[in-house]
Length: 379
Image (cartoon, rainbow, N blue to C red; front, top):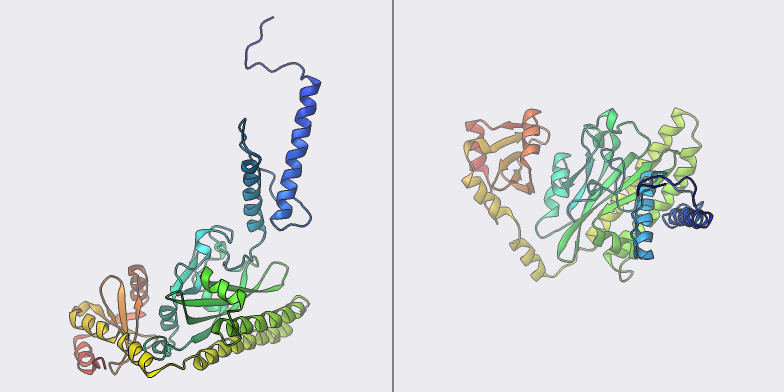
């Protein structure tokens, strides 16, 4: 009898079957060990749809890497609190490209309607919040500015279908702050208190990898900025741990409101601590002050105002400041008396949204003329 090459054998050789059984058992052991290594002490694999590619002559390292990568992805889906990352409801995990700041100076500004994290440059976000201290981030003072942000602000655009009311990663409140000079760049951070599905509270720190490393290491010495920042964060972490126990045992709305008040007190104390740290760290020589003054962006802002067309001048109805649209996505914010507050990146889509919502309204010709006369020259 002839048998074609793709015909199923009627019986399998016992020795071959025994080898296959050993291989299956070994693969299951490999999958369980990968679960342990990815953070599950029970060794319970999270996914049943693992597909492996094996070729004759392939190395054990290649096989182990496949299984480990799959286990890490499953662990990320299970665990929304990933160090240095915010949870992305659009991608349903905390390991996608959206979950980290785009640049060292960016902070978490909330969720888009489809659940994607929004990152903003610190000065832009503070200006959007109507914070009149933005100018302290520039020029000779280079202060650290921190602000407490409520949950309501962060989810105002988020749709319910994309996590608005989810307990997977429920931000109770956060602090944004900066800047810290590191490796020639200015870095900002976001510190969040987050509630998860088991009603536990966790502390999340979102920043560039370089700043996170500096914070977690505690800096070089007890006098260093990062040592102090590390201490403020550690103090807040202990407070969150204490509040978490009470939060999980909370039985009524009144008690929950009282605890929420304590959470925001802790956030305000953290913000005040890092701002105080910034004031203490601003001892600099006269030469350094003069150099910093030379670096102020006022002169460039005045140049852009001079080159701006009639349609480039707006009133920010929220802050009553004047916004002048410059070149290549740069914009400049001035007080009503012509004092330069800040320069910021204002992408076209954000500008159009603010115009559509009537947040930005065009200045009429008389207002433009008055503003140009009041504009203070760089000094």
